[in-house]
View (cartoon, rainbow, N blue to C red):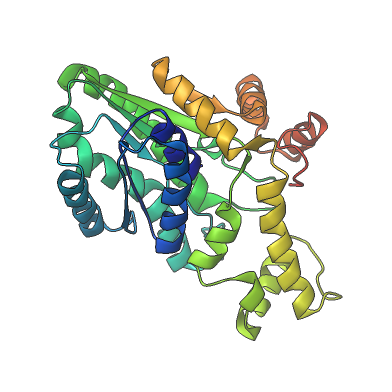
Length: 305
């Protein structure tokens, strides 16, 4: 989704600075964006982990020097990974890392670039939360605490910024983006971020996968190690390729929302459906019957939950 935003912004004539943990991914993004942009449009890349404040500060210096500017007009905080599902039974390091990227990346991004936003004549902060920012679940049999907690924090922080900015920097606006199932590589990228490339899982990692499946009531005793590797790869590919909303469509919805100065941007019919359902029966949102209704209404397209 970040790549799609870069491409559409560049095509619209915006100078863009983008960062990612993968230099290879950045170079691919820049190459694609340059195909859509005019020669006068400047697109720069910077390798950084958004969970690290020092790297954010280095990125800000990059933006100032490479774009010869003291201000920016748009800040998109869009990085995310999934992991640390259970607060009770899973590894704390993975939980903390997920929270640090999904919440800390937004917080540090805003902290780092706020002076450059305020220095602009007008500016806009766009923070990506999720449907898991108003519904902390992937279903009754699968804990999802780190990602959901982070996305709730992003939503609450951005909503609080609306009044804060209105009082203290009224020329700066803020929007929270809440996507449903978007066709991105977040599942495969998250596996790799935690050293769990499905194609290269070792015996210890395979054992952890089996234990996690068992905790979800899934009997994988008849599956070989190679079956599990292939299954994880297929899971990530299905999430990317069978989504009801593409990354390009999501970027278009987000940018249309920013242009319309909407502070709350739902992305995808599934996000709209789930938002309605949670509001209608909030007390039932974490009951098995609610998940049955989600499935009955076809929320999230073809992905099983």
